Length: 314
Image 1 (cartoon, rainbow, N blue to C red):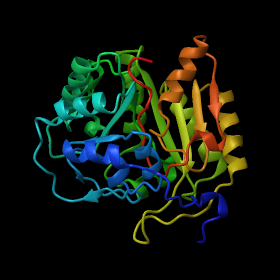
Image 2: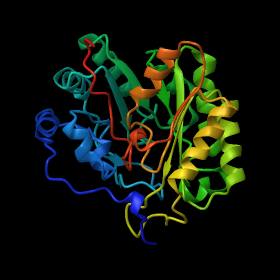
Image 3: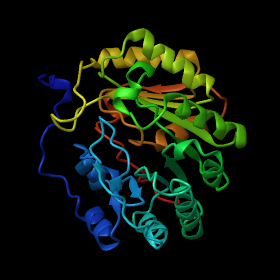
Image 4: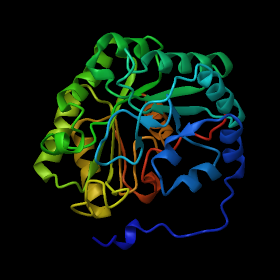
């Protein structure tokens, strides 16, 4: 299926990514920007931002949409949290996003490593707000509590798609378990913002999309991201439809009216792109009102690829 013009990113040779690339290389850190083959990676790196990928670069699950390598897991790098905290200071981040591969081989799914990473950042850069994009930890509530107890600003867990497609796309995961995770976060600590994301173009129907919105809201999800699915290769789950920008605007309006506190909806939106926007909008309103973003400024990335460049002192 040929990509429409609105999904073509213009080439430019005027972007300088060297500063971010050097920091990541020197500190031996992984990013989802590179591992997920984000086509907008250069834009993010040129702004000195990246979404850090912890617990290695090999995943224990083989989801049909994901470009991250499905392979035997790597040993845990106990010094990784400190190096990520150092990168946060070198990049002068006010808002940082941390995600991971899924580690079903670990007794807590890697939750303790998330907690150590959050703590390390807080020790070096206490003003930096932290968002974590977490796996489901196999439904282990005690593992989830390890992350909740560190009180990150946002806990994100992507639902990814509607229920009828979920098992085909994520055979090792569970739709209801993902919803329960979001609900459990709020039950344990309602001061933490919850967030989830859904991809469109996988064969879902309009009614199924709206049903997923309702289910996320019933699970106490605050923020929602909606973006176009783009298959990383011909061997991945195929794209069934390219959703128009106008349709994304309509979904932003519908989701906002349903009650999400912040909605980002556009073809290239992914869960951690311009992630700070949600907190910034909610903080500015400070009234519980909803905010949406559905223009091109919402993002132009194909995968979660951004922490905020805003400095810690701003």
